[in-house]
Length: 167
Image 1 (cartoon, rainbow, N blue to C red):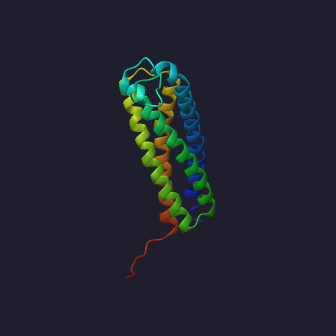
Image 2 (cartoon, rainbow, N blue to C red):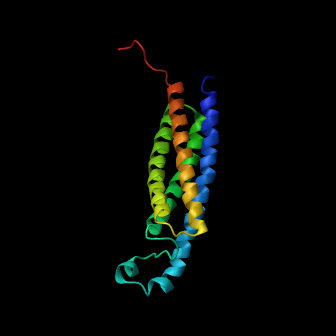
């Protein structure tokens, strides 16, 4: 079986991504919950534009709200993609590998968006340890998702041989 190497590496990377995306989901959910609980008491003394925003994050900087919301979305999409990707990798046929490749690419694009907000938050500074953990894991999961996407695309080329000499 020529595709055994890509299949096993994809399985390992998808399992690793499932764990990392679950950690992102848990920390981002905690941050949203913390922001909702503390927003009533903290945002009441702020100026009008910040007071209108329904969730005020008392920790971090002005990028924190966007970063946490996108991290929450990325965590849900990443967990779903990793679970369905594991199912598609177990099947290891052309339609399932194509589905895994497309969902992996979409998840990587969303993860890069969250990673951009993480980098901006690091640049602005003034975050607590939970947000630094979320920033670090988001940057790590963007790299592992890139590797996973590449391995799945290599698996496509192993399953479907190129057509040479056909018109």
